[in-house]
Amino acid sequence: MDISTLDKEQGNHISGIDRGKVVMYGLSTCVWCKKTKKLLTDLGVDFDFVYVDKLDGEDEDKAVEELRRFNPSVSFPTTVINGEKAIVGFKEKQIREALGF
Image 1: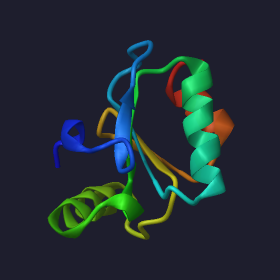
Image 2: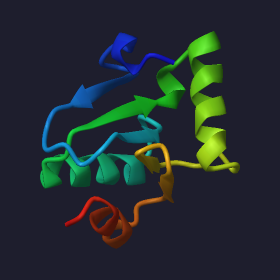
Image 3: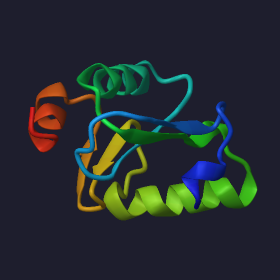
């Protein structure tokens, strides 16, 4: 899935400090997802976010497939760092540590 083709409702890119490739998968209605997005924004990190509930058809399938690689339970939020480490849920301390804060 090409995150750059998503519209503002489905997801977006937030520019900031490069701490590696950071992607947050969430739901637009999830309070913990909003808290995670706010934390990443407040830290000034460069990241992408994908609101899976705003995707349709093939885009949704691709996002869920990608998410399942890191979090088999497909729960939200899931923050993936450098395609290696996944932090499931709003875990501020773990997110800060993984990003070097």
